Length: 129
Image 1 (cartoon, rainbow, N blue to C red):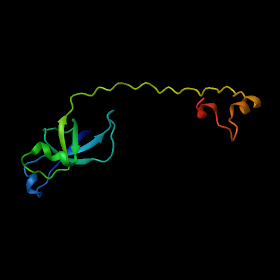
Image 2 (image 1 turned 120 degrees about the vertical axis):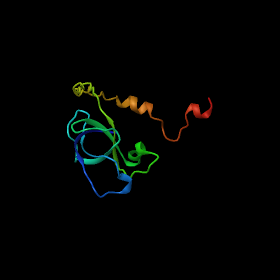
Image 3 (image 1 turned 180 degrees about the horizontal axis):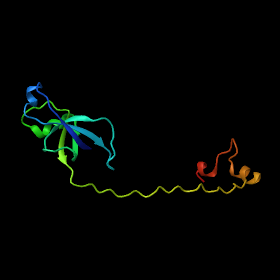
Image 4 (image 1 turned 180 degrees about the vertical axis):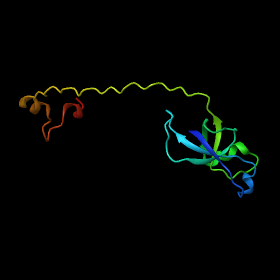
């Protein structure tokens, strides 16, 4: 579902027989914080919404569901009238300062050589000891 504001209605004398008796509304899509978002579109009205009201609308196959069992050729339909919207204000994102990495200590060469297995010699664990 999407938010929108009804900005007008559309009158059509010639239309598909499935649209006879259906109201067509001009809707401006909106973001959840009520700013205009995108181009205006034409929606069928399943609620009786009027100009200036905030509504929610659907698109696609679901747009024809409010009119079942009749088959209405609808791509977008207003399915609800919004009474109020409550938004929690988002906290400002906290950006952590990059931590200073401690310089890595170099391992003594003797410790590295002692830890590395020598080629050609099997370890005691592999011999079963």
